[in-house]
Image (cartoon, rainbow, N blue to C red; front, side, top):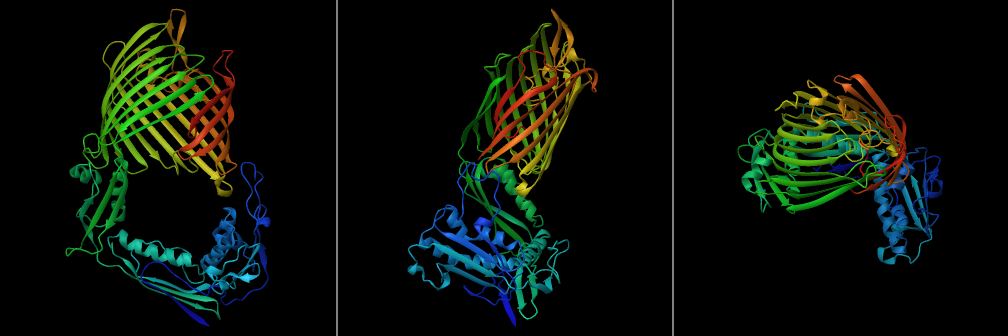
Length: 637
């Protein structure tokens, strides 16, 4: 028996069958029920149980055959299971869920290559498909779902044409493989996207023919496409802006009018507008009709965000005290997408070792300066630091440019004038300099606040020229890498590592601005050790040598993160750092290390971090050094 299943011009397939029964061929049986599902050792620790144990309705799902992947896939898609877990167990709820489950279960089976299917859903012994919606029972006590998937079908033919050069079709869409509807959909979608990627924006599926032969358990699939003409970008028509200057809106978008159509270039327009921070919604819609010159217009609809925003954050260490940060931002200062941001930072509140530190910064960013992917900025910052071994006041003014090649690769360059005043046991030292900081960041993490896979690489060099005798000339060089790897069920275990290297070249230590030198210790480097507790003692003072940062540093961090519940995780970590007296990781040096454990709780803006760490050795010699507590938002790195 052959059954013809057809689909329309859209790249989707609707394979229908009767709501209660279809042809079936089966042998043997297996069952899946809530009580047979494996449970976590932490089940019930932070929440109630689900399933038959606490529900007035008993749901049992039985699936014939030996395919162990079917029962969990069916349970995951079942509306009956969802309704039971959510406590919606009235007779009307059970009937509505059961009637919807016929199609949902059938879709799962089609996607696994089963086309001769029998599905029975009994509500207290009555087939749900035979019960009218208005005749729902008042109470349902037992639901029995019995599924006979029948034999698995394979492709006797898997054709799709014409296909653009470079198109990657699913590898399982070929003769002899299991005939899954998902592969058919993916093949059609990939073929259409392949044509769009080479300029044929109106490529579409013209005809789809799927024939199931139930005598031989074979599927013939034939998909035909219409590429349409090669198109160029036409005009971008803009709507929805209110305060934004349309000329600046067009410049920020960087719409490639006149160039060959490319979906990636259209996505670049969307990303540029999103990065500007001005808009809460961005919709790009291709015109339905092609212009006479084979160009395609695009409609841009934007919704502007509220102009102003305020935010803040905090961190806490039992030794170093609390850190509070806050900012105020204006998103569209002069109607051209200019962003004004004022940042304030107070650190070491209640510290046992130092006084409080203050920072105040002002920055104006202007997107689409020189190029749609370049943001120009002007920034100024003043700081006051009251540390255990020195007091420092700084002022920095600069202008720079940030180039975003894409969402992963960013480069930055700036020209700064800097003034520093440092007081320590050697007296007062004033620094005046011009600096040219340059950096490149490559971010391949899957998520910035709680990465599970990928890597993050950063490199910077900051040449500086002293403007008086007390300030030398040289360059600070820093490199940092982070890596993440997850494994286990649902990536429950994540291994994370970070390494950081830095050195100062060209200048002598006493001529180097103090904030270009390197300390180790604290939440940003080695947990378990007090903040900036490891430095070097090279500069002579009134009562011996003065403690400063070193000319070179190396820091290593390793973490094992384990998710024990949906929102709760535990972490074990070890950190180590070494600081050298001279450039190039040479001269005298000291090291220290720390280790500990922590708890993570997921929030909509990132995981809350609670870490307890203890020094392992080296570095700080004070009797007060000991176990430290760190609280913050986001992973440590």
